[in-house]
Image 1 (tube, rainbow, N blue to C red):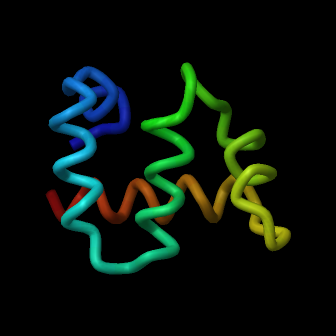
Image 2 (tube, rainbow, N blue to C red; image 1 turned 90 degrees about the vertical axis):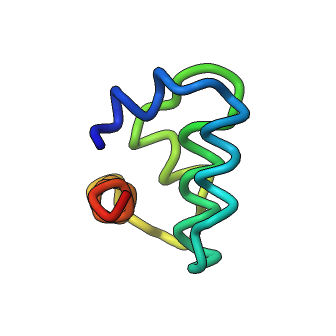
Length: 69
């Protein structure tokens, strides 16, 4: 599934998928990107995530998890 398709799901469907993610770091990335107030850029999401993570790393984590869906 693409990030665009994932964004089109209802908030409840997105929350249901996010709750199935076992890795807490990846789950937190999804919460920031897909459940926050409005659309967040990867750069802003990385800043909100903290820890010096790059926007590209965050994007790859999300992409890999969506490919497993």
